Length: 413
Image 1 (spheres, rainbow, N blue to C red):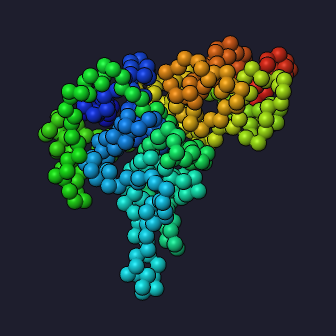
Image 2 (cartoon, rainbow, N blue to C red; image 1 turned 135 degrees about the vertical axis):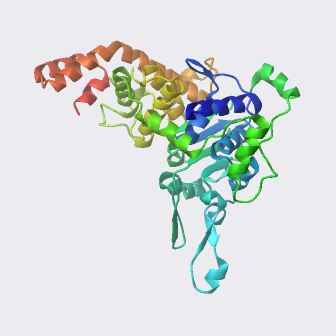
Image 3 (cartoon, one colour; image 1 turned 45 degrees about the horizontal axis):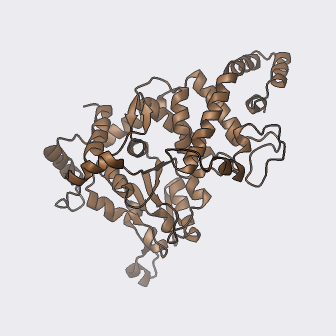
């Protein structure tokens, strides 16, 4: 069986038996965003943050995807996961000194199950105090872990984290930590119709608690095949999917739309670039563009995530190239959790009807606005690029002077 077929077989298995959910992401056909994007993050070794109310399946989803993609019984996934709480320290997260060796004068670290695991799950990540969240930063960035005078380098792995909405018992996530998550998705209430099924359906158990020890993968795969007829994804399958995704090219229009997104979300024509320390001046010439509504810029990580997951949506739909729709659909999921909107735009949209969380709704509207403006200027973009390639400086200067959109100024930098 091909890797692609196994991927969607596992998607359907989770959707029908473990994470009953509505379709809220349309790419040729309908998908559930939390489930689909979680599986894509899993096969590409990305990092995804699940946000939502208590008891809506965030942890179940993260553990179930991880279980199937790594052929690990769910109870072992749970043991290796990190549970966020206010007293979390280096020893619980990273490792502890080997006291026997320390008594001999030798510094040696016993690394935690979390660090050694081929996957990383942090449940209720925002229960970790902001002052301790920086413990995670280096490991998330480089897969290098250090403690005392010891260090450990681990292969890249997928990261899943769950975050409940703000209450008295949790905290905000610091911006550098948020920026390390490629995607953020809301886990939503399943609604009335699925709730009726939930009352009567007996759910499939992939805990497989009878499977113990270190050599569990093959036994778990046999268990899934015998019990449910499910074909497991092997490491070679995930590598095949990831490499196929990486090689999908962007169409010309998608590349041009990417330029417009970057120019509106990450550039400032007044101060040279977007900075969180700068405030848009009153009456700014560019007040009608997204740069006026957003306080921060896009990191290099975010730009790479936009590239990877736009390609991932193209792969899902079996498209040969990334198009404008793929990029427009994925952009809010990649950016909403790390975007700071100014108070005016928040106040203006506070009571508007929506199906998403407020922050994601703002980002979706922002991307739709950028997409509309792109449709009006893309032919002029092509014209300018042609002039640049031909080194026709008079025409370059004339076109840039004529066009108001910041993307034209950005092309000349």
